[in-house]
Length: 179
Image: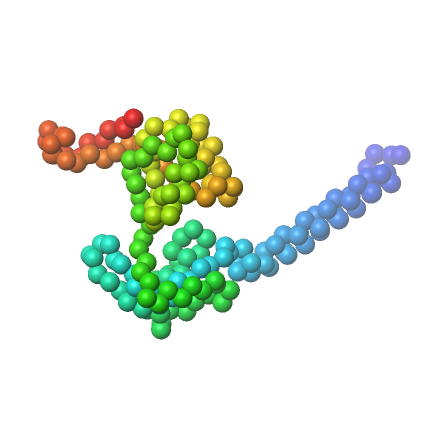
């Protein structure tokens, strides 16, 4: 074989590379062609509920609240708000809906799964544990993420913004690390 002349093996490798690139392009095109609807988490719609606005204490009657995944996606008057086509609909006529409650000072050890069910049963959807070791907390968060345990959102005691004039000499915000 002379310099500059391709061997039969080089041609075979070139063909394989071209096929691999074409297949990669096809897979990318197919994945990009999927509609965002296929990748969206399921929606849940609470219709005809009375929403309690905790900011100002008012009642908003005949409302629809759409939750997609773990976020509130839309809130509006039931006659005007369009519910997503494949949403699970819960007719809440005569019922009340409030935002999830947080308990910011809990000790859920030694039985976090038991306490978690009690919190959820009473509308508490977020808790901040004040005692749990970080590795235990991270393990629980992973179980929550995987869906192997049903629990409120779990926060660890963290940095707190203190603005109370009795706690700070100047009354100016001061940041402390809670333990």
